[in-house]
Image (cartoon, rainbow, N blue to C red; front, side):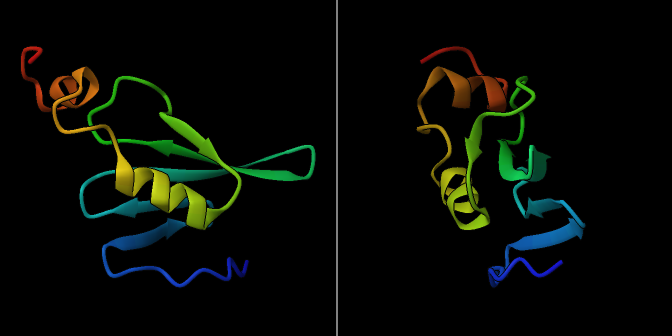
Length: 83
C-alpha cells in the first residue's frame, strides 16, 4: 500500500494499517464501505480512540495537537489530579 505521506522522524509505520509516534500515540486505518478513516488514540487515554480523521496527514495533525497540557484528559493521561 502506498500512503503517499512522508513520515516525520518521530512516526513509525508499525503495520499495514497502524502508525505509532515516539510518544506512544497510535493511528489505525479502518476501511468502512470503501471509505478509509483514521482512528487516533492518544497515549494514556482510556478511550478506544480520541478522534477520527479522513487522511493520514489530518490524523497526524490531530495527534500532534493532542489535549491541552492542563486539560482534564491530559491530567488523567499523566495520572495527575485535576488542575
